[in-house]
Image (cartoon, rainbow, N blue to C red; front, side, top):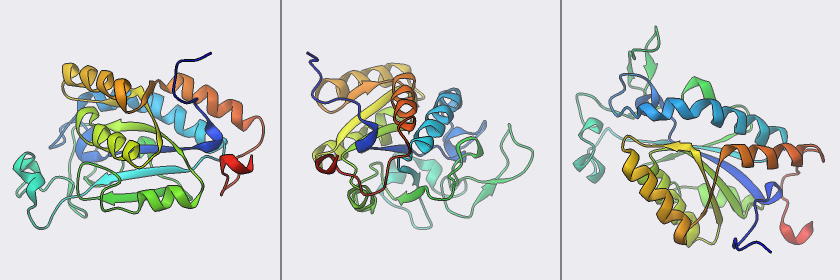
Length: 225
C-alpha cells in the first residue's frame, strides 16, 4: 500500500505550464533562467502526451507594466528600460535571429488551439485569475505543474492550488531555477507538505497509458467514472 496521499491520475488532471516565456527562457533575456531551456524537451514530450490523452493544458504568462507594481521592488527588470514581460514589447535574443515579444510563451512549447492561456500580475497562477474557474469547469481535481521559476512562481502556484483543494504534482525535471540550492530546497519543502514531486517521465507514461484508452472527455469528474 502506497504512503502517498493520492495517486497520479490523468483522468482527473490538467497540465499547467508556468511562465515559459521568452523573457525568462531565451538566451540573453532580461530575467534569463538558463536551466529553463534544458527542461524544454521533457516539457514538450509531456505536452504531447497530455494532449494525446485529451487532458486540459493551461499556460500562464507573468505579466508586467505599464504601471509599476510592488513586484518591481524585487524584479527591477520589469521597469523601464527593460520592460520585461510587458505585453507588446519586443526584443532581440542571442539564440533567435528575429525580435520576439518577451511576454509570449517560447515557440518550443507554444500553445495550440484548445489550450488555455492565463495572464497573471503576480507570482501565483491562481491569485486574481480565472485559473480555478477554468479547472473546475472541466472537472479537474489534480494539477501537474512544469515551468519556471521553481522557488517563485512555481512554488506560489503549487501552494495556492493546495490551499484550494487541488491535488498538486510537480515534475522535478520540468521546473527550473537560476539557483540550484533554492530549486532543490523548494522541491523538498513542497514534497513535505504541499505536493507530490514526480518527474516528466512518470507523468508522460501515465498520460500515454490514458491515451491508449481513448482521449479523455471534457467535464469528467471522479464521481462519474
